[in-house]
Length: 239
Image 1: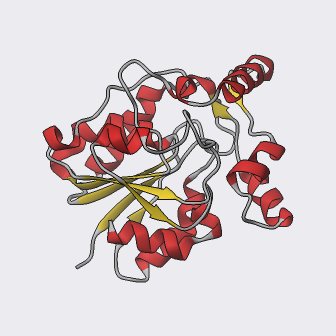
Image 2: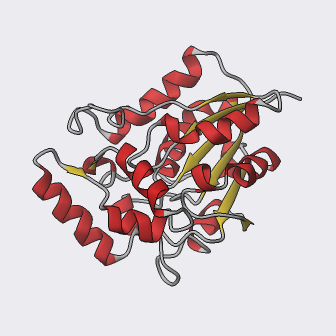
Image 3: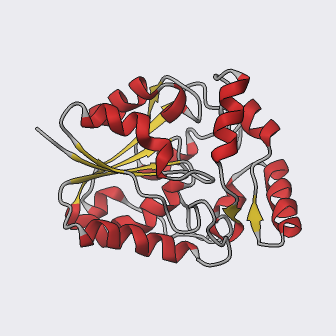
């Protein structure tokens, strides 16, 4: 049976990053949409929007197309976006899928959920940017996000990233109870994802536990949507 997937990117990325996964899902007859969110298109003003505007955009994106039985998928920072949108879209959702994603807790913005060195780095970069934005340093991206790709690929992908509005990292989102919402949730975790290090700030078990589920391990790094799209598409479809 054909399904509808709406794929929400993480920080620094546009909808283009989902294309390898989207093509694999479409090849199996599914409808797949991967919007570029406000503030994350090439040339966007990083100061023009707040996180609430991004959530509004996703809600309008789904409602204006009258999408039904949607699997809403969020990657990394995109977990904040789908968490904010889900209560307003509950009647249209079939499932929420968090992939190596942040799951908000009460009063905690994303910047509070990453290790202190990242907190300091993001604040320093935003302060120096002149546009309250965070440009991903290549060394961090290559070493912790896409370490499973050769350097030419790392540099090509890095060149496509855009500065991320820092206010998207400093705004909390109300937490979600999938059971109370009536929408099942799945948490997929790439086994080689070291964007968050092991220990207190690791992806699991804290984020899956906030959803009341166990993490489902899948192959790949934090950028598996580009480096292992076959495995990620299969996992999203199975979810």
